[in-house]
Each structure stands twice: as structure tokens, then as C-alpha cells.
Length: 299
Image (tube, rainbow, N blue to C red):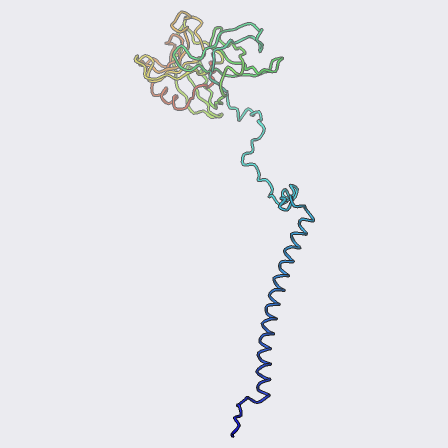
């Protein structure tokens, strides 16, 4: 009877195969163990951070913001101011010009002294007899015992040259002028000076005997045009001067500077106290002389 012998691999090959399989299983176990170790380390680190934070600040202060002093250090410096208003300074004589005027904002009483208890000189309104805004030449200022500011103004009343004190709050902002009109009655001419330079000279008509043009210091109150009567020409300026002879005239006999329809009479003593100019000259004057301009009338 024949004996069957099972075929088998050599011993060394079997051992090698078993060894290789074992090695693969060992490497898989090592990889798994390594991954678990890494996860454990990361988790431990996170727990350590949380534990450390809780230990330092406490559970309720884990997200506490930085201290205010720390924030202040981090903020940039404040920017420079965009508007720097200097302290007001008094204008010198050159900057102030030849005079200053202001409109009357509310009716008020002009007094002999800067005091509410002083004698009343006249009542000052907001409109002129011609219907224009009333302006006053300001020639001084002073504070009373209570600290309130008053201004001294030239008044359009008789006697000519009268001044009075009114509260500063009764007038608006001051406007400086840089022109000065000089009327020479003896030479019968006018001269307009601007910033020390003569810009106009012209012959004029003045008041006749019995209606003389007053002398003194005055100012231009208003500027009027488009008259229906050619007697006054194309333009007329009203002044603060008053006629001492014709006090019964309409509006009280204010002295004006205006044109004429009789230029052949100039220069001469031909008016009722007003100063007459040729129409071409008064139009030139109207372009050069603003309201508020001081006027000096000399004999």
C-alpha cells in the first residue's frame, strides 16, 4: 500500500511568513498607540491651559478685558485742534480805519453818560426819516460800574456835534471805513481821501446866506438814488448834519450831498444848506464813498 505524503513548505519559509505577519500586526498596534498618545498630549495641554486660566483668574473672569491703563497706552495721541481761535485784540488806528459804524438793532435812549440813570439826550430809532436802516458812528466805548459795555455815538440832532452813550447791545457789529470826506466851504470844494490818498476832488455848491451849511464833524447816514425830482440828481447822500436855520423843513432839515440839474451854478453859495455836486462827480463819489464815512465840514 503506497503512503501519501502531504506537500509542505520548507520550515524556514513558514517561520518567515509567521514572522512577517507578526511584524505587520505589531506596527499597526504601534501606530494606534502613537495616535492615542498624541491625542492624549493635546487634550492634556488644553486641559492644562483651561486649568491654568481658571486657577489664575477664576471661572467668571476667564475673558476679562485688558486693564484701562493698558488701553490708554495703546491709543494714539489726540489730533491737533482743527480750529484755533486767537484771543481778540484791539485794532490799532491804521487797521481800524478812519471811523466805525453800526446799525441800530432796537430803539434805545442815548444818555449823557454811560449809565441808565444819566440824563436822556434823545431817543434813537432803527430807521431814518428816509426809511433806510439807521446807522450810528461809534466814537468811543466804556463800561459802567456794573461791567456793562456802552458805546459813545455821534447823534443826528441839534446842536450839531452832539454825542451820547447807548448800550452796546442796542447796535449790531462794527464796520470800519477807510474813507474821509472833507468839505471846504471857503474853497467850495470836496476832497475824498481813502487810506491817506486823495481819490476825488470836485467843486461844490454850498448854503446861501441865511441857510448856511453847518461846520463840524458828521458822517454819511445813507445813500439814496432814483429820485423823481431832477433837483437832487441821480444820487444823494444823507448826513448826520442838521440845518440850524431851516428846522421846520420836512424830516428836520438834514444836510444832504447830492447832484443837481443846474451845474452851471457851481461852485457857488446856491443851496439851502445842502452840498451840491455835478451829476458826473456825484456818480464818481457814489462808487468811491461807502455809508458810514466820516465827514468834516470846514469854514
